[in-house]
Length: 122
Image 1 (tube, rainbow, N blue to C red):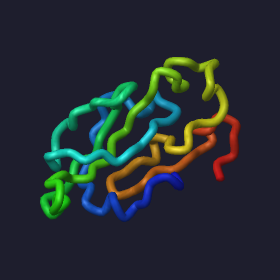
Image 2 (cartoon, rainbow, N blue to C red; image 1 turned 180 degrees about the horizontal axis):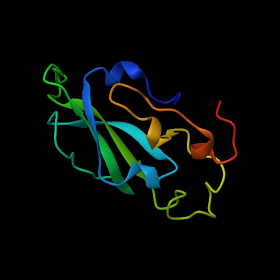
Image 3 (cartoon, rainbow, N blue to C red; image 1 turned 135 degrees about the vertical axis):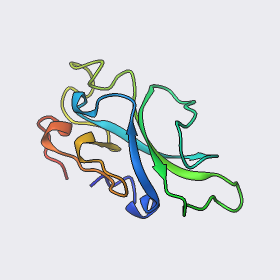
Image 4 (tube, rainbow, N blue to C red; image 1 turned 90 degrees about the horizontal axis):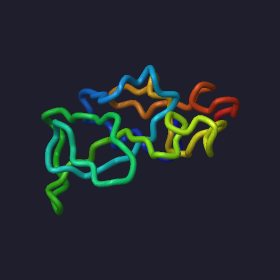
């Protein structure tokens, strides 16, 4: 399990939508973004590219102060292994990275030998 994401924030996920084939990726980074809607592709205003996102069930409540929903987004940066296989993450992976094959709704995802490429997950 990723130590950077608590599964309690995923309790209202209903589906995970992939924008790219997760079987082609050794790892994806995951983060929680605040969005105005429960479903649909969220806006992406960060570096890198969004490769997937979670949609929420009808019971998911927005934050009362901001009116925004907390949703998981999966992304990759230009220096990640898929675009730079001999670069910084030729071995190992960023702390927020998980194997996309282990991602399910309401489940954080896990580090695997494939995602870590030779580094034993802790």
